[in-house]
Length: 231
Image (cartoon, rainbow, N blue to C red; front, side, top):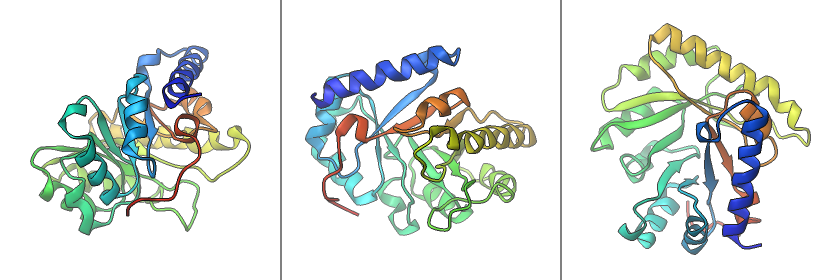
């Protein structure tokens, strides 16, 4: 299958998952995770109808945006990896959404570098994995409040990545906990936090059942990853 055909297949599966969950397909954004894949692969996916693309590495994002140029202006970019503060200038104002902000300092750096308000998500490590970034569920509410007071960034919601498992149901408690945490923080702040970024190729259907608005799908669209081209 071509990349465009795989994208079409993934979109159909996500729509079916939404229907089974009693939700409209329009409620869920598929972020095609294009990290380490060439710009030509993004063009192929876009030709099939993909709009949203997720990158993990700041320099790779900048390189692809330069290569694709203004002719692909209909694309929406997402930064989904852990972002170092010294690379915030490569991301701020250049993506639709930064998915993994985990400190007040990073939020402040994005605010300083963005020419206009930068939408962001708070990354929450609900699986307790030491190898992953993100704040704990206990510290998330206080950090969300501090970030909400920073001018030039807008907190739109939360993201998480559960521990890896061959069983999609193993992710359900993490996804449900993120939604509950989002609801509590939204109530505390008195503002809507509409975005829940959770779910990948192996567990996106469970994530959709738990309220995901953004699912991050890479291999099912682009195939296995080539060697990383940037950092």
